[in-house]
Length: 136
Image (tube, rainbow, N blue to C red; front, side, top):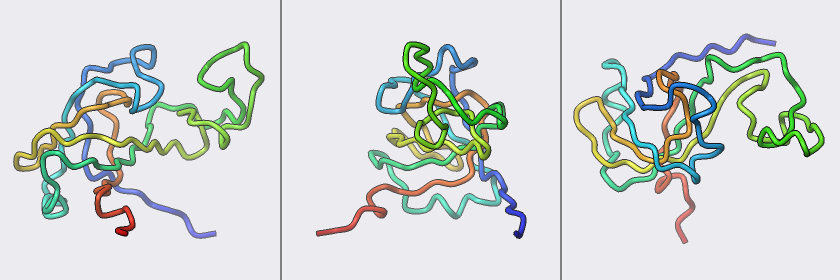
C-alpha cells in the first residue's frame, strides 16, 4: 500500500494545555482560541467568514497510537470498546474532527469558539460546513 503523507496547514492556539482540561467534545466546549494558517495556505481561507461553522481536522500529535481499546469517554465503569467505536483521541491515526464557530477572520488568523483540542495541535484541513451540507 502507498504511504500517506499529511502536511499541516496551520496550528491551534488556545488555553487548553493538558488533556484533563479538555472538554470531551466540541459541542460541550465554550473555549475560544485561534487557528493560525501558514502563509502558503492563506488563499485557502478565501470565502470563510465570521459566523461560519467550520469542520476542522486536527492531527493529535501527542496521542498514543498503540491503544486499540478504551473505556468510552474515560468512564472506567463502562466496559472497554474498540477505539473505532468511540471518539477517543488515542488511535492508530489520531485525527480529530471539531466543528468550530468562526468569530473573526483577520489575515491568516481565524478566531474560533467551541475548542476541544490541546494548544499547539497541528491543523490538517478545514471545511466550511455550509458548503458541505446538501442544499434542499
